[in-house]
Amino acid sequence: MSDSVSTPTADVDNGATDRTGTVRTATVLAGIIVAALVATVAATLATAVIGSRLGETATFVVGIVGIELSFIVVGITYLRFRSSFRLPVRPPTRQELPYLIGGLLASLVTAFLSLAITDAIIPAFELSPGYTEYSRLGDLTGIGFAFGAILSFTLIGPTEEFFFRGVMQGRLREAFSPVSAVGIAGAAFALFHVYPVLLLSPPPATIAHMAAYYTLMGMIFGWVYYRTDNLVVPALVHGIFNAVLFTSALWI
Image (tube, rainbow, N blue to C red; front, side):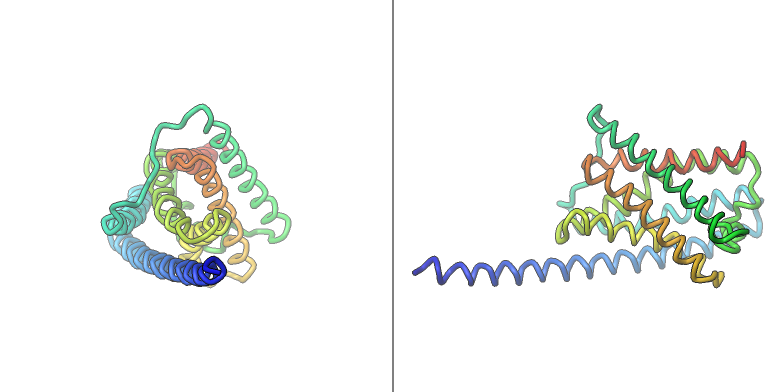
């Protein structure tokens, strides 16, 4: 008799606890996203002011550094309130190498298919109308792309994986399944790559294309992180992928 009475009560308690954890996680995640949006917008505006006094390459570099520092500041601030939060960082092992290679190949294939779809469906379409002007990529010379490749490997990859996978996906895993955590973190990754372009009033097809592309890229990095439980591996995949894109502009 005692078992039949206590089991439903335990189920109710567990259900309430699960709902509370989900709501708390969603609230914290929303706060992290808002804080990062404010920080990155502030960094972008500061770059615009500083950029009026610098050359194209210097403005591009300062812009990247400012945005990545925004992610670092918000991420570290969160971690200060979660001293027990775990960020697995270690040198990649031989067993993790297939995930590194697989993630990189998946990223490159995704980028290639994205460009192919763009050319087939929307002729004369970059990633977005005006995106080159916004990002200042059109102003870069060889040395600018070289700086982009270096920053990709040393700053962009490690920082964005720390923030989107380490902090966001790590927090999501406390209340959601691995698939949901990877997907939501991937969508957040897409948000930060798409929202600046919305200011340029692109057509809906452009927004959908970019959102799908960056969400999928974020999910690839998130899958690598989930499978390896090592933040260094997706950071390498992300950094190498970006560096390949920048260096390819030197010879395409």
